[in-house]
Image 1 (cartoon, helix red, strand yellow):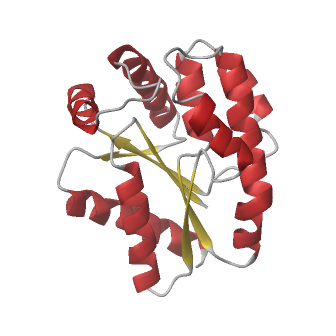
Image 2 (cartoon, one colour):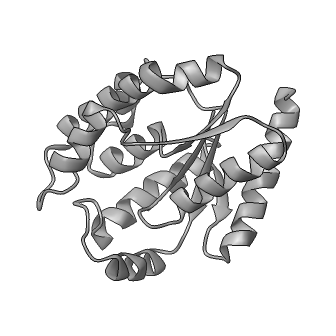
Length: 197
């Protein structure tokens, strides 16, 4: 399982879809998935958590995202992995560590409530400067509750800490889409070779 992480509008979705397409072109069975998931809890999060004017308490946020993640793994991811597919997830556990960690929650507690889900085999972080992110968010129009510059800066700090700890591999996402995609593909193919795929 591979996850692509990053700030809002960093290009995660585009790169996740491109990675799946590139892996399929190389003969791998790859599937795209995303968090919040398309399950009931994920839909609840999109509707009642992300679209609010003000954030709900961070510990409630973290528990909802963890519940959605467990549901997502049980309902979809496990089956796909058991079928030998490469799952590419647009966000995963590191989003919880970054977003709820940035809100002041203890990182170890967030890890604890996510203990029931498997660690990804590979996690990539797309690094895009905050100013670029804010410009993209401005163009997008309607914002989620997480998209203020203050929140994004704090979230980036947690992501960078995870990069330094070796949990995430950083890729410069502030370049043409095709260049970013090429780098991600190389990292993934190298890892698959090491895992013996």
